[in-house]
Image 1 (spheres, rainbow, N blue to C red):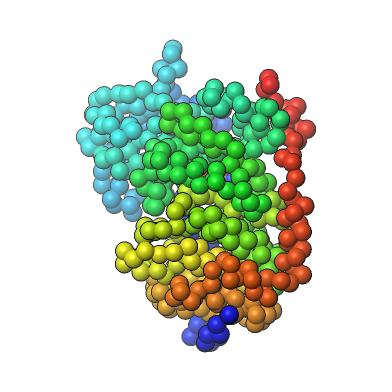
Image 2 (cartoon, rainbow, N blue to C red):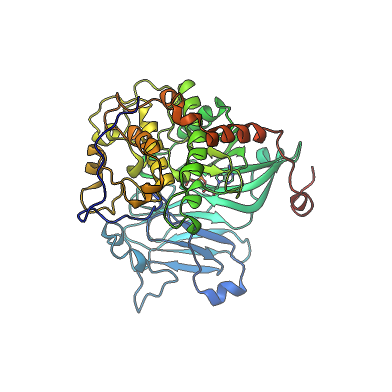
Length: 469
Ligand SMILES: Nc1ncnc2c1ncn2[C@@H]1O[C@H](COP(=O)(O)OP(=O)(O)OP(=O)(O)O)[C@@H](O)[C@H]1O
């Protein structure tokens, strides 16, 4: 039963409608090229990947690179001015913190610590005046282990371990970057089927909820994914861990994030509309129904964790990123997820166990955006703090909803019921009349059509990227 609750309509006092923004995403993608003129001439041999907010990634092309706060008598190549406001970090940084030097004969790379507070590599203090050779994937922190600022990454793409390259050809085509590492396009050498290879640094994470990430965390993600088989969930084929890296070989999903679809300018911030919205709602509810039926709770459902099969308007959606998933739905207490999609019982954080209904709340947030083009809860609304917006379940239905049926509005509201006992389960949602429409049927048929043998690598990939098989 859909419960009809009092709905607040737009009024003069209503907060402005804010755009949908990415949540909990690290700015590791902006490549700041230091000394552009030089880098244009010299090919970078490595990169310092910035992993703290405000610090971009830096290509290393010169044999000598100096990093610090800098001053007129201590010039630097990178001076941390972008994080001057970040006092917790900035106060520890010396005028010259460290340098990175390439031995011109051996081509080996060394970090020289110039700082009194010290520089750490992989949580080990180097010490002023001392050096250490840098290896791919090393973490560089300032003063204390927790102040990780860079990951050192070699530029050449041929450093993947044999354990991986024996079975897969790993191309240098970057599909995306996440908090843990990058996702590369590859293919299986046995049958040339296309795969996505997610390379994860097992030593650290930039996401608060994974701040103490360990190999075990990735193992959990892999274990969960191995249990799953559903057309609306990204499949895992393999996971290979060597030294600091784990390589998750997963189903390639070529249409980008659902997030990009939701913010596509063609929808004019008005949402995707009733028909397309229901086409996607059916797929996502079916995915969650399946997950819960096998005892798994995702705990981080959001548009960034949903991929599109292709660029077509009506594509197949695939739920991904099971890094926070819980294999046994009993005894869930951990405070996790992404704030603006987080269920009230998690936000309340009273150490009380919660249930898989937290996924229904998050899905409700995703579908709210899908139908309306704006988020139900956001830091940018000024009427209430975000925690209170969530805890009270206050919703604003602006004019975007005029083109959406009452039935759909009621369903979304039902999913966003603060009290978990009243909030529907995925089974209840799927058995409503709402899910028996033509758009849902067409989604079902398209999903069935999409279940085909894995596609072969595109011809271009086979000829230009293929190594010996
Ligand atoms: N299976 C896939 N097929 C194609 N592209 C993918 C696939 N998985 C991820 N990507 C691309 O890589 C990007 C980063 O993915 P990833 O799952 O690592 O990101 P994330 O969710 O931000 O990271 P984290 O695991 O730290 O949460 C995605 O936004 C997407 O563009």
